[in-house]
Image 1 (cartoon, rainbow, N blue to C red):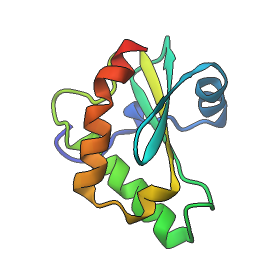
Image 2: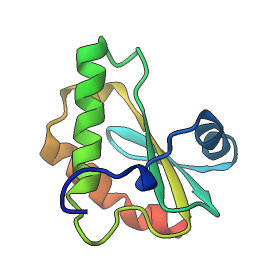
Image 3: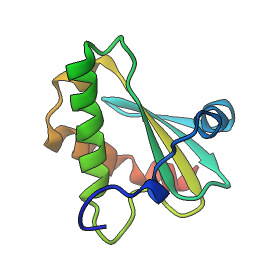
Length: 114
């Protein structure tokens, strides 16, 4: 996973997002709410609502989350057997990549424990 964020590691279908949102456990961090579902395939989905800002801001937050997850390298950020939906909070719009990576890094143990 040195380059890119392959489709096999992403939640892409609405029904997959809804399954995680309806049955998942919420883990709150400074900039995000992480919804974690057991019995997953180790995938990540990103949700950034219009509350965060215009399309430029929303896409920036999405790119930062993707990059932070991608930077884990050979060790996947999402533990096997879990699906995670990352929901951005308003504070995420002003966050830098280092803040996002730190925030998601600190929450990894909590995600694994769910």
